[in-house]
Image (cartoon, rainbow, N blue to C red; front, side):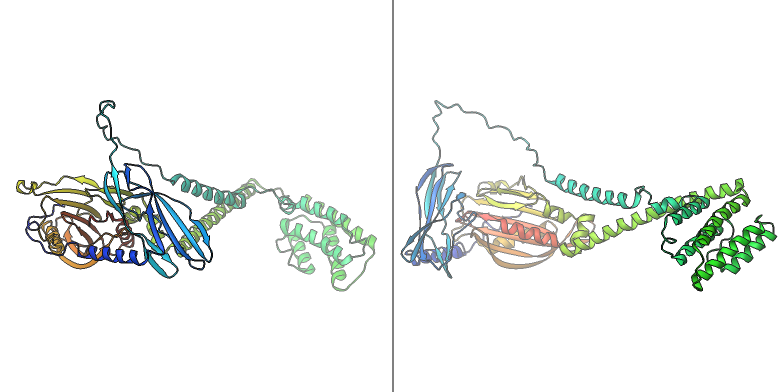
Length: 553
């Protein structure tokens, strides 16, 4: 974005460093107040580039107080290399706590380690700020050869852990597929009952008689159970081969049907066969319902009679025709198709049920929209969950974390301004994109006597947006402080711009941060979509990552 700074260089006010000066005075007063209880020191005030110094904080406190030392990169512009464990020395009823940090800096210059906040019980203390000078490493060029700067080389992006998620997904799918195969599609070994059911009716009847012989009904004089099994055998056989209502018919109805079939020449049963079956069935009725107790020998004789009559029935049954055999084959094929369709249906229902349950479970845990966007895809979500880049841009540097690396953009200044200012701009996206980030640093060769007016700077930035096609800009201003204490102004709101140059304007959010020092204007501009929870999280993460060196803003 090319912002017009023509008016900025002639408009100024006296706002300057007022807020930062007040903050510095406050830190000094706090340091003086806490001098007797909290002390800080460094082992050297002058180092070379990359050399480490030890920053030490000593706290004297009661044994009952909890002490919280600073953690993280709170020593900027110096970088913390290592945080050592706390040393504890007991002195009568007090503790002397000593915390050490290893710090370094890779640029030469004079730096100030900012005051550090120490919590002791329910009180807050600040350490003294300390001066450190970082010197260049002296190189004897007469003995050490000089080499050209090596060209920029492309570094392959570090691989993510996507293969782990793929492996876990394949493992889960494999387990589910194995379970479906094992319980639904696998040809299970036939049980004894299934094997018997596959036998022809004649063989099943013979096998049932054999099992009846192996029972102990007659030995235990259980005639009722014996005759129940015996009559069930002959009824089942007749039901499958002669009359398909033999099982539910009474003795009288069954015998009448057999005689009708004989008289109608549908089956050539002899009178003796019908009479013998009738006699045994009626005797069984007496045993079951009238509690008759025939002799054991008679029961065995009845068993042999049934065995013989089954043979007689089989002999008189007509042989199945080719058409009947073909119908039986088609019937078996239809049964096989029905069984396969049933397996497919069960597999489909189980699969859909698992997907629905997984979707519901993940929705309850992570939220419906998050799961939906994960499956369908969402541009802002992909930016939020991608590999972020933390880098420094411009001079003096602005440290910021972004979803994509910001690329340097050449800025063309009018000839009359080139001697008065220099500008560096790094950007991802443009104002016409759904999401964009711009870091702009302007160095003035000769700042105004009364300092740079930040309000005028913000006004000129908004005019620059309008010059690029933005309209209906709604503006709110708040004070803003970076995590490392640099203070600036946050301007935010909504604006409209024509993305496709068709006259249809799209509304979006924007955030501008301005940091002013004596001769430096640092600006961060972000645009992002409305009503996008992922974009809101992206902006929050970016804003929380911004760091400027103390004294530069």
